[in-house]
Each structure stands twice: as C-alpha cells, then as structure tokens.
Image (cartoon, rainbow, N blue to C red; front, side):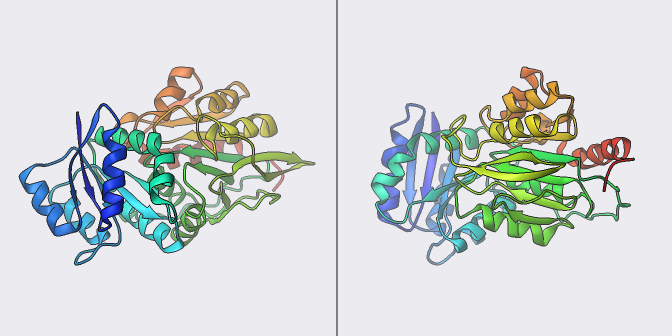
Length: 347
C-alpha cells in the first residue's frame, strides 16, 4: 500500500484529494495537513511514500518547503498547481527543485473537475512513489561549441512525460545556437507550455517558443507542442513546417509524442533524429519505431538517468531505438551525429 500525505491550505482540496486517492486499492492517505510546519512534523513522525504539495500556503510557501525537504529528507513530491500563468511558473520552479510531477488544480467546480482527473492522479502518485533518485537540476556549465553548419533538411524531435521538463532542459541547453530545427512534445496541460517554452528560451542558446502552427522550422529554432493540441511536422515544398491538430487523444494524451514522431517519420524520412526521454506509459514507442524504420537515428534515455523509465523502456522493447544513452551524454551523441551527416546540404 502506497502511503500519501496531502498538504494543502484548502480544507476542500484536502477533502477531495483524500476521497479520490483513497478510491485506489493501492493508495491510502495517511494524513492531510494545512501547512508546511504540520507537514514537517508529520513526516518526522511517520514518513509517507509520496506527498502532494500545494504551492500557495500560509507561513511557508510550497517552494520554500520543497527546497528544505529535498535538502534534509528527499522524497517523492507531486505538486498541486493552479491553472494560471503564475501557477505554471511556480510549478516549473518546483520541478527544477526536485518535484517529480504535478497535478493541475481546477479553478471552478473543484470536486467535479478533480474527479475527472482521478485516474491521472492515481497514475501520477504511483509513478512518483516508485522514484528512488532525486536530483534537482544542477547549473550546467555550457562550453562553446563550434557551429554545426546543419541544413534546413534536418529535424530533431523530442518526446517526454514525467520528469521531462528537466530532461528536455538538460538536452536543449547543451546544444549550439545553430542546432537543427527542433520539435518537442512534453505531456503538459494548456497554460503551462507557453511558460515552459519561455523558461527554456531564457536558458538556452536556441530560440524556443510555443508552436502556433504554420511556422517554418529552421536551425536554431525549437517549437513546443501547446497543451491540449497535437504538434505535427509537414513538408511544404522543400521546407518543413509545424501544424497543430485538434484530433482525439492518443495513448491518453494530447499532445501525444506518437503523433509528433509519426508525422516526422512521414514528412522527413531519414533526415531526422528522434529522442525519447523519461516518462510513464508507452506514448512515443510506436512513432519512434516508424522513424527508426524510415532510417532515422533514434536515441532513448537510459534507466539510471530517468525519473520514470517507462516510455524509453517500451520504445526499446518495441525495437525502435538505435542507441540508449545517459541523459548527460545525449547532447554529445546528437552533435557527433550531425557533424557526420550535416555536410553538403542546403543551408
């Protein structure tokens, strides 16, 4: 039985989360407290397996508490965040500090809307409870990299889920300013992806933004799939462009990594690289296999460096992975590959 501690200053949210979590046969709420000090005392006396943590709390906010927790008593944390711009920024800071994942808190009918997310909440808590490694993002010292001289005919496609915000950051911040045009699907609700793109743009040499659709994909540019819309790549004449699609969920997700990877396989042939990073579930495995069969170089993050070794494992088992690499080694492998194949193309 997975023991869960709920930390939220709202009595209603504590009650609703407790009811929803306790509906799972393998999850049980062992405590529900209203502030960080009560949480600290509870953890000292009876450590839970995983906790949910609100960001906005009296006396000590969730980010401060999380930072102290990860230094003194690291454990799996799932944030409960509001669907606002400030909530998105704080949530991404929490993931940077070591939180495993987050649940978006509804703004209106809390009981009904959280009930709609019951299965998601259960899955996120199970995945978080299984995490044994906690590493807040380290400040990366990025050495200057010579220009790649890559062409407009090369595309990098990245897919991730749980733990992916920091894994994607680790990859993109280590790439040079003229890296191939890049498309990214990270499982994330609408309202969070624009903030995620803005944070990446501030922290990398690349131009990162949330995809709007119909953009030409050029070297040095990164397009993030917007929440609740599939991102795809299409060929337009001799160029590649983004397209946004509002079709049904795939593998339970919109945006879906499978949708992105399959579109890259169809549009780009062998002129693409696929990278599948940490995340629970199997989204991306089928699409990466299509890329691999089409002649693409494909990389999967290894188990030791994953927060959740789900999506990369399934992709490897499906036979669509060229290489398995530790997260910190993926940028170097990409650069070596592009140096090998990038000469002699149209810039």
